[in-house]
Image (cartoon, rainbow, N blue to C red; front, side):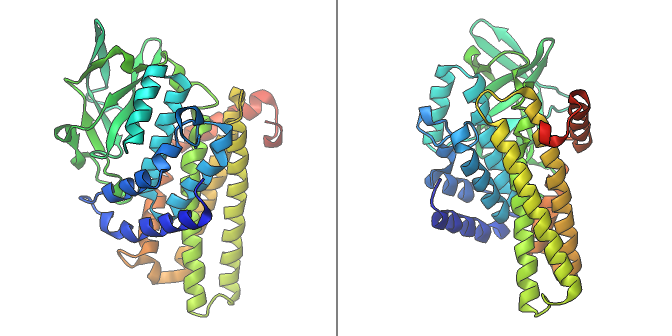
Length: 364
């Protein structure tokens, strides 16, 4: 992990760039270049490929956790893209061939950003047809983050045997449809729809076998990564609230003290839950049921984030709603980011594991 000073320097630089990219036509190209220059994209590679193992091995878990929080504190949109890059590398490390791994590592060494695009366009679900040693794609992905920035995307295709992963080029501008993303938050993610019809790749683009993508503990278990980014956003709001209250000489008011203490406790509780989940999910030989730790940690993190958002809004009043301000942008981005990936279904999966194992969370 880069030393604390260099991490703070990168966090500050990203935070200063954030206002310019927070619009429908904004770009995170400069921020992604910073990540490449500082070695953060490369750090996600396993150590055996020359990286630091951030997010893809026990030795790199704590560093990955801290990096995601740092970016979350600065710009949640960039943290989202970085988490997708980390996830894609993890999937290659788990299921890819040595040839695929070597090519991906070389591209990342040269500054390539990877992504994971799982959401199909309902009107055109992604599909593929094997033709000799080639694979022809049809269909599109929506909610694809990093359009125009992601060089290669890990995509999923539903088959009779299960979800099949493919690592495919995603760098043709004419295939990007930014109009498909009309959200009020996370605008800088450059999300939208990517059309794959007509793309052909070699059959070594297939990663692993059908069903690998959903294997635990690395599917649901891996959500500790984006939760770490959520936590970083909550930490940033907490510090903004504390700083503004101190500047206004209101931090000693009893009601404000209650908000400060409640927020600090919530953030630290989420941090401890996430650290346990990350350490146990990423441990060598981790059992599938360990994924429930990440699901439970997600619940704690969401609750903490929503509490901090509410407390910051109550503490700062109208100042929290100044359009274009850091607090306004962070609240909007965090609220949207927390909605990711059907949280009710994740809560149900956690409950099922606890019931089947007749266990407390401590016993997982």
